[in-house]
Image 1 (cartoon, rainbow, N blue to C red):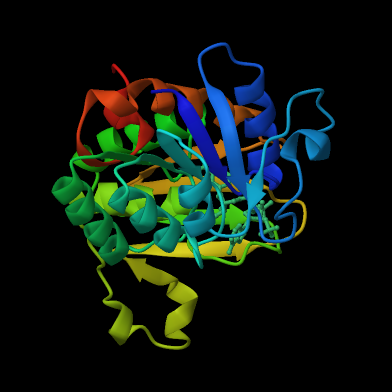
Image 2 (tube, protein in one colour):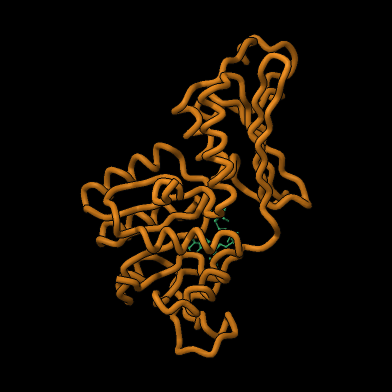
Length: 266
Ligand SMILES: NC(=O)c1ccc[n+]([C@@H]2O[C@H](COP(=O)([O-])OP(=O)(O)OC[C@H]3O[C@@H](n4cnc5c(N)ncnc54)[C@H](OP(=O)(O)O)[C@@H]3O)[C@@H](O)[C@H]2O)c1
């Protein structure tokens, strides 16, 4: 039950993850998806002495050619939903790292996962410290009813908000919708300057060189402020530990779970 296919195996996260899986005694990497390297050998791309690991351009070809138990998707929001639904239809479990999927798309994933009795674990951020930010923010949102989120990423990031922030806004909105003393539509001046509303929470996305991935939840109360901030470093290493936790727990539930902490013991 430990054969893995990585969609996006040649990407920034995918390469590090592929190497980590190849050096793990518990999991076998049977293949990957990449349009530009389809037909090539992933092991040689990674510079690893290993038998050939095939790369496919579509999930359909991978499903026809290799046997696997779990799909890990680190691709792009443009293709991830297609990969995920195709794999669920074939009874595979899924770990979703790709950001940018909407709540509506997750509803689709949840209902197909229930129908096919498979497990899907999606996390906007697999880093343990980012998971802690989510948890601490949720606790603060129980007590403080004014809060907004700042989402930092590099100038190249195509989606906004980031997966981390989309998930955080979704989860905080389940605790409470923050109060807006001046409704956005009554803002005088440029209304967009107040950010975008994600599940009723104002989110401000900053896209600048020098930023990797960061999130700041800002809480305000009369006469005091609280800021909870997470900043990722420049490598993909922080995500690997969380992805391995996801792989370890993927067979312990059925249906869709969102957020790594849903399978961690807090
Ligand atoms: N959840 C988390 O903890 C976390 C952490 C970091 C990043 N992310 C998210 O993970 C995703 C990937 O990030 P990244 O930085 O690794 O991206 P990246 O470096 O651009 O890699 C994307 C990978 O997906 C492949 N790919 C893209 N479109 C494809 C398609 N249509 N069919 C098949 N393969 C395709 C690319 O190969 P080809 O171009 O050759 O197709 C490449 O291997 C992003 O959505 C990012 O926001 C999540």
